[in-house]
Image (cartoon, rainbow over all chains, first blue to last red; front, top):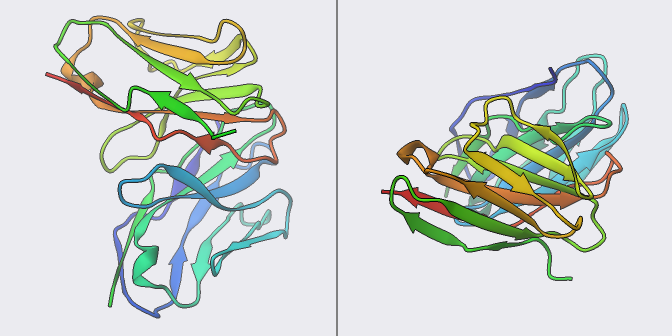
Amino acid sequence: GNSVTQMEGPVTLSEEAFLTINCTYTATGYPSLFWYVQYPGEGLQLLLKATKADDKGSNKGFEATYRKETTSFHLEKGSVQVSDSAVYFCAPRYVGDKLIFGTGTRLQVFP
Amino acid sequence: DTGVSQNPRHKITKRGQNVTFRCDPISEHNRLYWYRQTLGQGPEFLTYFQNEAQLEKSRLLSDRFSAERPKGSFSTLEIQRTEQGDSAMYLCASSLENPNTEAFFGQGTRLTVV
């Protein structure tokens, strides 16, 4: 079946460091791709999305580009803040199918 | 619309008891999903509906779990004869059918089986 593989955490960074969280999905289909974020004590919320190849989703300084050739949707941010500390989930959604989540990557940013 | 609403927010039950959770999705959303999340893990798919039709149920899901969406609006998830391993956060989400649109999540119901 369809699946997604996400970089294991935790990822620990100092404030203003560069962030990359890797995500790859199975290539059986042409999904829309989402990153969700879960801040401490809060519910899941959408961070960004991309719906076709070469699209770039962006929000709150985070970016991810839909790479069909490598079946990847890596999340990046040029300068992280303490407030970015959260768990990040990569989630492809295939036509006619449910949303599938990766295991999540915990990000901890220290001042 | 106030988003996806789940009730109760917390439930503590004794092993062997039945519990029922409710989810009220965003009104125009025809897709409704149930997930389960344990500490340090991603949401695990349980089941989902399109309108009132249950399209898929996880093969990992015990027969003790059942879900309904009788009128294509709110949904209930029932767990019969609860076990300690059922302790988790139960998440509900809703979306449009269009796969390019995001799912919106509720705050979840935290179940503790003692």
